[in-house]
Length: 346
Image (cartoon, rainbow, N blue to C red; front, side, top):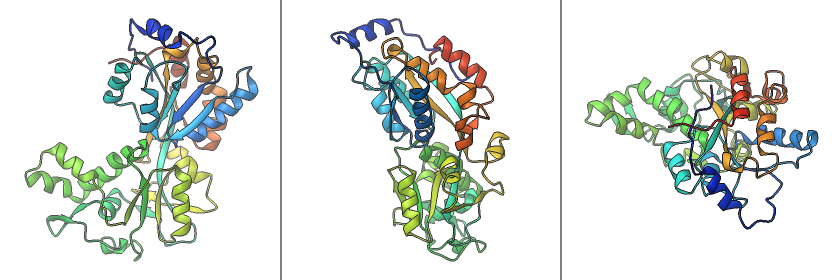
């Protein structure tokens, strides 16, 4: 089940206070957050507006962290109702929400997405990567000749002769994106471990947690570029750099196959099938978070959530799957939890 329970005795009082003084609450659901979830939420919002008596929700991007920060500013019609996220909300964010009066949060897992590594369709032969390749290319410090040193590599072929002999140029999600955290944990740290750099750091006296953090640090010499915008900005960088590699969500790649080619990761091609089977190593669940205090006050909020997770929308034959979302096998449990308005637990 994708929902847990966190019950606040003051939720009703907080909501009443927040909405007091307003003759009528706004009638449009407001949403912000993950650029990965953005296309799915936009599809749902448009269909919701067309197929119900409620206005079309307003959906904005900005990244998971930025959306959750906005979500946690408080309750009331001047705050957003839903935050989209390509990662789970952090304990620190739950605490920040609580301090601002956002006590009851409903977590909705909508499905799964893969993180892919893609390049210009007619560019160099970037067709197969491992986490070790990405770490050696982008890590600030790497293992070479038994020592952890500042990254000396200029070209991909410098550390793997099977990769193209072209300058390293990678465009990765900025730190405010949920995709960045998955990239760090499932690619950089894994590559750091696979190359032996993590063990070397620990053997050199670092604590394991500090060593893992060091593995996540990327080089700052211009070969790794943070992209703070959405995937369209990453695509624009790839368009202007024939040797560039970009990090994208699977759905975005699948809708731009005329411009991009994708690489395998550890020998597995990214697809809805390999993600659903648990074979593709760089995948993650996607979420949105709802302020329970806004349900019953902002018209259509609960109805939007129910519409989003309905079998017709989020199921394996729905429009979100057609766009690239891997349907959650526990969708029926999610539907029941939304209906019950179950909130998060400690």
